[in-house]
Image 1: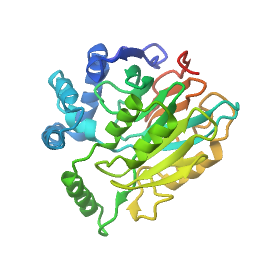
Image 2 (image 1 turned 60 degrees about the vertical axis):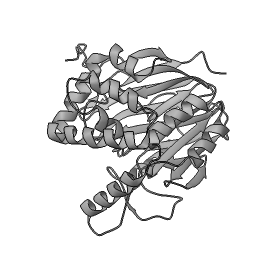
Image 3 (image 1 turned 30 degrees about the horizontal axis):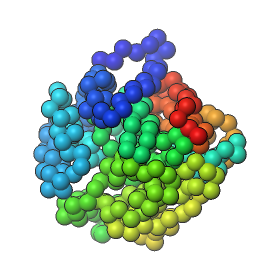
Length: 336
C-alpha cells in the first residue's frame, strides 16, 4: 500500500536508472509496481491476466523480441500475474500535439495518456535513462519496458497514441478478433518498444523521424515527435509497413487524419479531444492550463508538457477522481 501525504497528492519521483534499465526501476519502486499489478487484477481479472501472460510471452519469444528477457525478469519478481500482458497492452486513447513553443525557443509537445485501468496516474515516475545516443527522461511506471512518453534534452520529445481499430465487419468483437489474428502473424517490434529504441539510439530529430517512419512494426500506431528547433515536429500515422506524415503544427487523438483508412476511433470523444487540442495548443504558459474536457476525462492518467530545446518537462498523474500527484516541473541541465 502506498503511503499518501495529507493532501492526498504524491510527489512524482525521479529515479536515475542510467543504463540499468526497467528491471532496476522495479527494484527501486517495488511498492508502485505491485500496486499497478493489483490494479490490473482488479480491472482485467486474474484469469485473464494469467492467460494474457502465457500468450504474450509466447508471441515475444516467436518474435525474438529485444526486451523479452527484461520482461521475464520483471515477471519473476512479481507477486501477481500481468507483467507480460500489461507490457503488450495498447489501450492508450491519448491526445497529443506538436507546435512551436510560444517562448520562441524550440518545439513543444503537449500530451495526455488515457487508459481505463486505474493506478497509472498515482504510480507515474520519471526515469532518467542513459541510452547509446544520450540521456533521456522516460515518463513511465515501474514494470513497463517500452516508452510511451519521453524527452531527450537537446534532441527531441515523443509520444505514442493508439490508432483506430481496423474495421473489417459491422461487429466490434469480430473486428477485435480479426486484428488479434493479424497481429499474431506479425514478427515485428511493438510500437512502444520501437519508441524506446528511438530514444536509445537516435542522436537527433531527423534520425528519430526516419526510424519511426520506416521501421516495420507489429501493429498500427500514432507517433508524435517534437524536435529541438521550432520547425522540427510531426505526427506520424503508421500502418505496419507504411507511414503518413503531418508536419508541425499537428495534433493527434485516436482517429486517422492523414491516412484514408476505415477504423473505429478509440477512447472518449476522439474528434472532440482533437478539436480541443487544436484550440489549446498555442497557450503561452508553462503549466497545464490547456488540460480541459474532453482532453481531460475520467480515463486520463498522465498529462505532459515537454520542450527538448529548453529541457522543460511538466508532468502530473491523474486518476478518475482527479489529480493523483502534484505537478512536477523540472528544467534539465542536459539541454542545449
